[in-house]
Image (cartoon, rainbow over the protein chains, first blue to last red):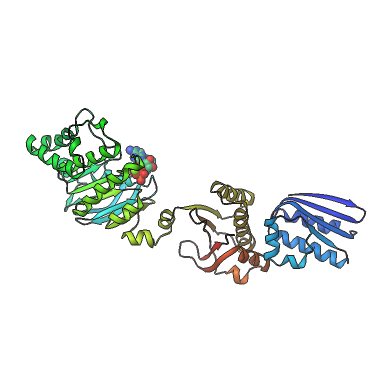
Length: 99
Length: 365
Ligand SMILES: Nc1ncnc2c1ncn2[C@@H]1O[C@H](COP(=O)(O)OP(=O)(O)O)[C@@H](O)[C@H]1O
Ligand SMILES: [Mg+2]
């Protein structure tokens, strides 16, 4: 998986490309742990994300919690059909702001 | 009539028959089915001594034909064989082809052999081809002539090795109907065939051969409608099967995922189904089961795909103490897995060395 980070002031976009699964989730987890502290708006762009597993969901959930704690919005964008299905089945459509 | 006991046939590189035992009664029609390379031809060739078994015994009418003192020509007289490739003599016309055995081997007069030959040609619908040469006949006609030639030796048992496999599909029917007729007349027959409908109609019993043995033996209804064993079912339902085993924590996650993808692509299962299979594998095997596995373990995943109705079933068998991830596993993983399946259940495994088994049917739309 490739993570492309784009920061304009305190607005950060993370574009994920490839597969977010057991082996790649730690990559995103590291990013979430180190880069979110000064972010006031987080965008996860999933246009190029092909697959997501529960390991990936957990990291996205951690990011959402972190942003909630900071009282800042997080938006998930451009998820494809496969990824959307996973969000729906696990109730993530109710937790996340999906555009 | 035929008794096969612990028959084994080894070749330098393969052992197609590991341990074959069977009892076949007079008038039985046995269809032998199974994947190619499972020793079906080898079994027939052992029966009429075209091959020498490595070990084991075969009795015909109480006589041990595997005994070196057995008179091969007497056995051959009892047993006829019909091959895929007809094996007619091309330099003789059809009636001569049929007469030559009875005249030279049985000592019949040419007149008797000719009369009987014409009767048999009548029976297989080729009376008017008696004077034709083999290369003037179609494949189906050649095979019917070959059957008549075999019957001319008055065998008690006829072995057929894929009698219709070399034929144009339009000619399969005429040959099968001749064989059907012989079955009605009570001739004892063993038929290796890929024609499943025919095998179901004509047989008293079906042998499914696999893994060097008669893997399952039953009536046509048992074998075709209710196969008891896994490989039989996979063969009968023409399932496409993918299997993978994890037996160490150093398993190759990326490799297995790409194998699942290749399997799905090969059978045109669609990207969505491929992702669903990968999800199931990852959530159950990797997330739920693997962390609980200790030193010696095995997690066996099998996907069975039915191309006719797109049914996709997955079974995951694993070693270790009873553990039902559906009840005790991580919520997120299990929520996802349940959502991706139409049916899913946990139970005890029935195959060694496994103790647990999860079976599921993938959601289709
Ligand atoms: N004469 C032979 N020498 C060596 N190997 C053979 C010989 N005949 C068959 N085999 C091997 O034995 C196995 C079973 O062959 P066969 O009985 O022809 O299978 P089937 O008829 O079920 O397709 C195959 O792997 C085949 O290559
Ligand atoms: Mg064969």
